[in-house]
Each structure stands twice: as C-alpha cells, then as structure tokens.
Length: 90
Image (cartoon, rainbow, N blue to C red; front, side, top):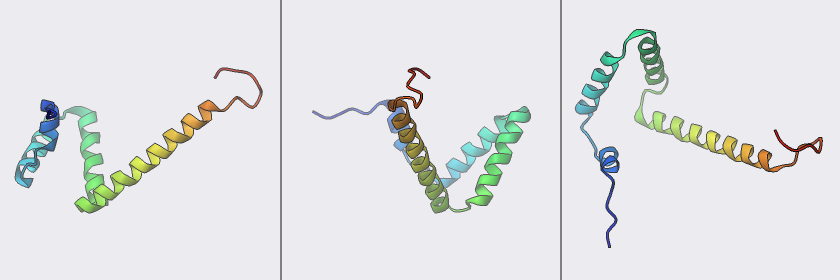
C-alpha cells in the first residue's frame, strides 16, 4: 500500500527554477502595501545582506531551530517541576 501525498505536500516539495522563485518573490513583495510591507521588505533586505548565500541562510535556520527546540524543552521541564513555594498553579 502506497501512501498518498497531500496536494500541499507536493507543492512544497516541487523544485522551481531560480528565475521562477525570483519572479514570485518580486510579485509577493510588490503586493505588500503600507508600513507592514515596508518593514517586511526592510527585514528581508537585511537578512539577505547578513546571510548572502543559501548555505549561510540554511545554517542560520538550523541554528535558530535548535535554539527554539532547546527553549521549548526547557520550558516543558520547568512546567513539570513543582513550584519552589509549594503552591500549585501558575
């Protein structure tokens, strides 16, 4: 029995040429309006300057995912510990 993929999975797993990616990026950025769009464009421009290569971007994402996972695991452990004052609840 083969496992069928959801249509959304196929979308994310389908590679596209760099030119198509750039076109979609331009269209998306052009559609952003107002202060939020300006802020999003500025953040993207900063990120691309700070991490100019795909390898640097992937390394950044992996590092942040490790940090987020460690923080989440730490929070879960803390929630399992009884409060220091002996009272229950948050």
